[in-house]
Image 1 (cartoon, one colour):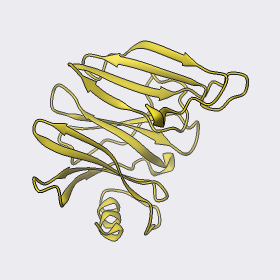
Image 2 (image 1 turned 60 degrees about the horizontal axis):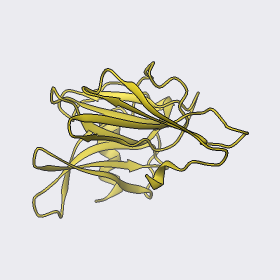
Image 3 (image 1 turned 90 degrees about the horizontal axis):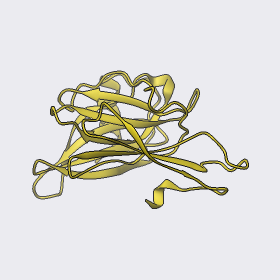
Image 4 (image 1 turned 120 degrees about the vertical axis):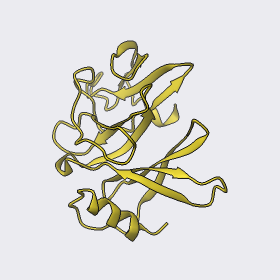
Length: 183
């Protein structure tokens, strides 16, 4: 995949930042209804997209880009399909309060402008896990709260049957960095 084409697709879908020709990552891989979906991210360029992998596992099609609003500098997202067939992404942000932002799509192609949600009131910039097991959605997110001054020292896991109504299931506090990438 050429970053140029990924960038051009993102610009056609509202991205206003300058092109970056490095830093393109396959961030998540999920099988849903027999298809392999890939979450793409260009961290330095703050580009995000949802793609589907072909059956030979050698090419993929970018279905949609979600980067707006550009001032939030969205990155490192996690995506899942909701029970009604729509999609939701939770995105790390690199500006403002650094709280996570959410975007949705009816078809994986056209996405809403990302916004903050009340059930995640004080997140900080870290990659969020967002998975589904046995019909329950699990969302992990890092709080901006610091225990004894330690960055990323509070981590929450919220659960939901539908991706809309969330309940706090676990809250982990550590006096040291709690790195969610190890989960």
